Length: 314
Image 1: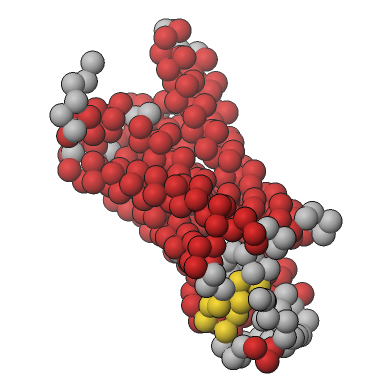
Image 2 (image 1 turned 90 degrees about the vertical axis):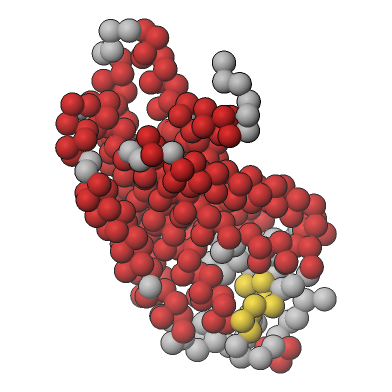
């Protein structure tokens, strides 16, 4: 039975509700979520292992892919195991500090994921639109600086989140109507005006997301323009198929992120089940899709894995 007031908890504990109204389906919902997580972990670990073992893959595209894989592993691992404990074991209570830690990892690594999508789009733009200068533009030192900047941006802009929430007084219910410690779900429990805190979070998310999305869109527009000018129809179709799959993954990430953002800002009439389910898809599906689209569909990685499995490559 869910608690209804403060007396049931210590001041340092929150209660994760899960998906309100669908508690009776939690066990079944956990099955596809667990499947997504297993594929995400296996796929991303495989990509990291292959790139590390095969020196011919030490290229900008695959180095950025490794950064994306690490981000996916941290992002999914910071949410899924705790979520499955909620769904399957009924473990609803979470310590306040653990909640803030989870929140930091979720929001900062989501920003990093967006940044690495942008870095990979830029790499594809240079490789297709200016191939002769690709090696001189994206040197190892420059790749390291780009990766460091993406990580620093995520940490710098989202470190204030747990610090701000740590300082707020909480009263009334300690029930978080979500499957994980999402910033907006937690800040609603504070018993003081949190308008400025909410505005900071929404502003940071909107600026980072809109800037990254804009430059990614520009990169792929220029890529597609260059692809359609290729003399070989076969080469055009191959490049178009590769870019198309990349765009689909990016669209899944940004469309669910935009839905979640707009729901916080304007979607007061959106059913909580829909909002929470989309928020989960936003965190779980990209780590599942990225190794498939960027790994399985990449011939060099696919061939290496098949050779390792002693399968004849046709």
